[in-house]
Length: 251
Image 1 (tube, rainbow, N blue to C red):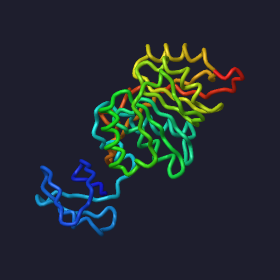
Image 2 (image 1 turned 60 degrees about the horizontal axis):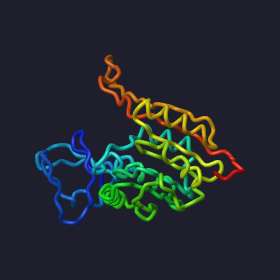
Image 3 (image 1 turned 90 degrees about the horizontal axis):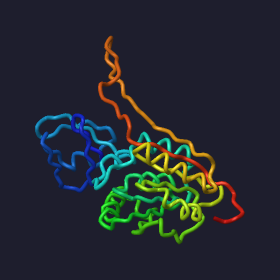
Image 4 (image 1 turned 30 degrees about the vertical axis):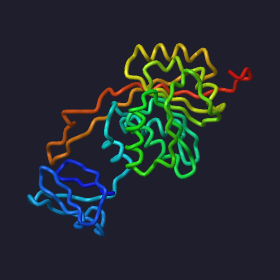
């Protein structure tokens, strides 16, 4: 696989000898990339500058074929850090969508962990499978079609992340599936959803949740003219993050 940057636009392509990659900025031969060092500068048939790299997990993430909105890197980075997701962890996800978050989770639990991801809509789950396979992470993911509000047969998850419109309906199932001390994060787009979720969460054995919004703003750096970029990635959603506490009742 190669990440090809033509001027400012990125493309991920699977390299094959003799193949040609066509764009509106001209074409480039795969043979011109194969065997070259990362970061090599090339030119398309229309003499447009091109650079080739090995794709990072963030590149796969931002280039998924979308059937739903995705969780952005600014939110993902905070989640991964706060939930302690690393190699060997067993992670539950609900709301697979296009599979972007699933891919990130699989990348960070590799090589010894596992991600079990539930999605209610079969067509979304199938599209996520294609995206995950494209990133060569399919061995770390188990995709399931189902509604976790009706129960989760698996147990002893280290972490759980929900990206669902009504997560309060799933809290009983999630509580049973999580280990004591396990982390729970819920991604929600609106304040009303946050309030209803947090109020319901207090009925279960969880710490009082942290609710955050992650904002990111790039800067345009030029000599004697450095300023914030006119556009920024503002609100994408709220993150509700907590941990399960020990509960002798076995909710």
